Image 1 (cartoon, rainbow, N blue to C red):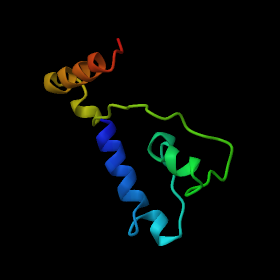
Image 2 (cartoon, one colour; image 1 turned 180 degrees about the horizontal axis):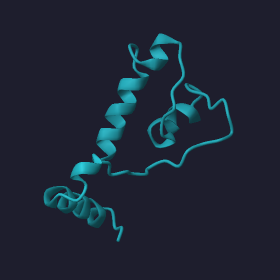
Image 3 (tube, rainbow, N blue to C red; image 1 turned 30 degrees about the horizontal axis):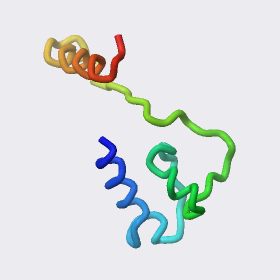
Length: 83
């Protein structure tokens, strides 16, 4: 999971990414850009932040109670230690 976050961060911060382009803003988890903020590559323009490392399981309402969807949601919750 950390490797995936690092790869995503690299894609955002490389020469062709957001920072390399030198423009724009992003609303993104601090988890993904903490190093870039710490080194000054990115700035946090506002003091408000969103909680990082949160997960949401989303499905269309009409399939939310379908057996395979419920099983997948239950599996995710167990993997994340939620009950």
